[in-house]
Amino acid sequence: MDKFFLRPIITGEDKSTFITEIQAAFQNAYTDEFGAFDKTILPIEDIEESFNADASEAYFAEVGGERVGGTIIVTENETKFGSLHLLYVKMGSQNAGYGLKIWKAIEELHPEITLWETHTPYYDKRNIHFYVNRCGFKIVEFFNPKHKDPHQTGDTAGNIPEENNYFFRFEKEMN
Image (cartoon, rainbow, N blue to C red; front, side, top):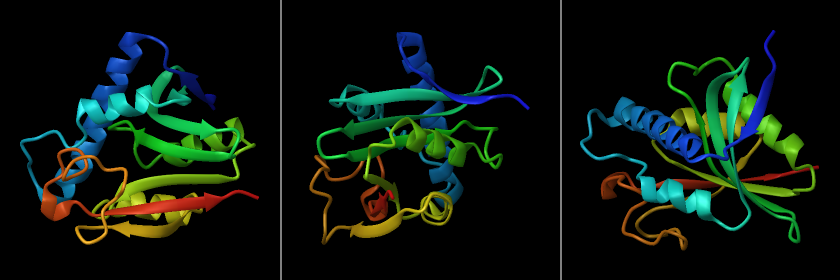
């Protein structure tokens, strides 16, 4: 069996590949739910913001030298807080357990973190199932037009249409 590991993203070419792959994965999840959409759901600017966040770490997930996904995390050692900014499984690599392997590798990489946080849109049932039932996160907040995410700078997250701009915030307390 080929070895699974996280490989740091260090080159500009790596970054471009990450952006292309994550945009395809997120776009597919949106169009599966709502049909064709002419805008890119996850804009480059949002991905760049995660790449450029203080203390961000970006990785490709690889199995036997083949990319199967990737992630961007941010950790705060003083507070022992971690934020899962982005996680994707590459198109064509889904349903093989790679998402959970990515998450478990993150946990192993940062055993000092006592609380992890992430967000996902309400329409992405696969992600909700993944974070709650597979990874052990709990839904702790629901962002909507009457309760906006205080970190969201524009009217919507990315290019998600306003009528679908609903998000869950998840937390996972580590033992």
